[in-house]
Image 1 (tube, rainbow, N blue to C red):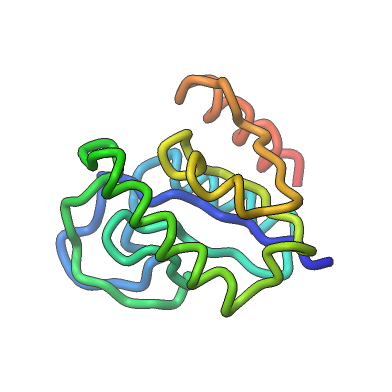
Image 2 (spheres, rainbow, N blue to C red):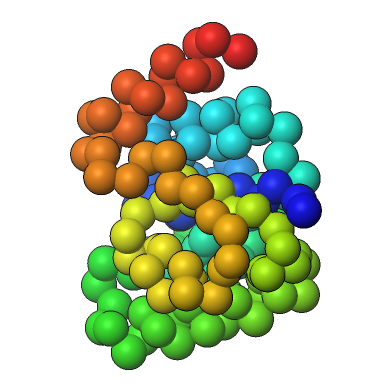
Length: 139
């Protein structure tokens, strides 16, 4: 069983093409990434509203898409795409997936995954940041 961390993309981005791990510049994303790296997982991916499953080293131009603006049907299609991408890079039945992503990014993925954790579930952004800062500062 591998440990896989999935981090959602965020609205705040650089204004130029960059690697995914650098493109997203909100404090929440940065702390999510630092926290994810501190856990030494087997893999970390970003859940991009535009591209689906992305690697940290993938480069993109900035974009303005979010699952928050997608209809339920489009959100389901996005999730199907991500599950196909995940199936090529992970074992969705055996691996453990840790979500650092909101409800809209998880909702239609979870039924396809056998093992997952959602450590920030139910926390507002302020409480998520507090949780992450505490854990990252204790590295």
